[in-house]
Length: 204
Image (cartoon, rainbow, N blue to C red; front, side):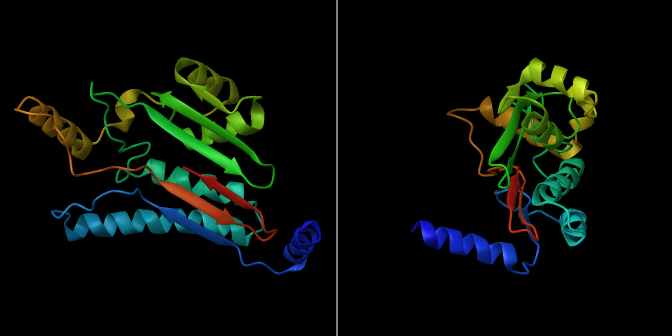
C-alpha cells in the first residue's frame, strides 16, 4: 500500500492538473416567491465568486487563495447566509462563523460568534496562518482581527431588509400556539478548490 501511495503522489506531481473550483450558496430551500430579478442577481453573485477564485487558480495561485477569494465575494453579497445578508439570531443579532482548511499543510482555522468582522473567512485564514490556534471565538477573535488588520464594520452592516423581515416573521410565529418552526432551512456558503499542484483547500 505504501508503494501505491508513493506512485499516486508521483503521478499527481507530474501530471498537468486542471485547476477546479466548486462553490455553493447554501444548502437551503429556494423560496417559491423568488422573482426573476432576484434570481438573476443571485446567479450573478455566484458567477462573480467563481470568476474571482478561478482567475487566481488559472494564474497559478494555491487552492487556499481561491476558496478564500470566492467565499469573500459570497460574504459581501446580500443573498446568502454569510457576512452581509446572514440570518439573525433569535435575539436579533448577527453572530458569524467561518472556517478554512488547507490540504497542502493539513492545517485549519476557524472563527465563531463574530459581530464586527466584515469577512469572517479572512479571519479564519489568519487564525490558521498567523496563530497557533485552530479556533477563536467572540471578543478574543475580534481582538485578533484588529491585530492582524482584518477589516471591521459596525454590526448594522450585516443587516438586510429581507433577513430582518424573516426574523420578524419568525418571532411572530413563535408567539402563536405550539413551537415555531421554519421550512426555510439555511446553510452557509462554501467553496472547494483543486490547484495545479494537486492540492485541495476548502472554506465555508
